[in-house]
Length: 183
Image 1 (tube, rainbow, N blue to C red):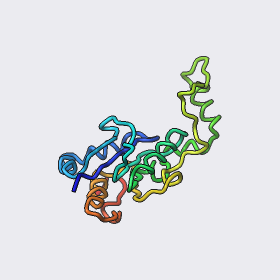
Image 2: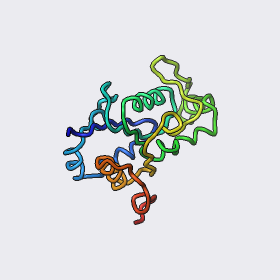
Image 3: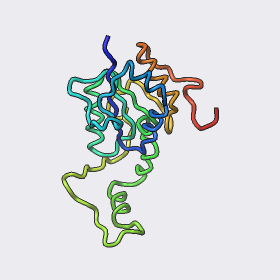
């Protein structure tokens, strides 16, 4: 049997989930015996291959139209989709902007900031429009595994991946599902 193919995409987030993935440390060597990372922030390939992958992992919330399309693309090209981290699960800290309209957010960010001089809201075809609200991945596409945490621990990520490799649906509970730095 060939290696399980995995694609990852980083949406609206801080990279903490990707750092936790790297915190698997030497277990990554063991993981790579069974997994091929096709497109990830680590490999710098941007999209899952058209042929698809076995496992797709999305971190980050969805706060603009491009992120929404990325989530739909990943869902269409993977058999199992993991929403990794609180931002992917619920929208996370990025949802703080949900208390304001898009217009208020852009005005504050580009015109009213203390460091702005003669600011204007940029308008360009390459700038992706914001969605009305920031949401979790599951609000846009069906998700198979929700892996909460800010960020999830390396042990939780390892558990989810090894359960999937063993053909089991990960059941997050007990010590695997914990928050904070204490035991």
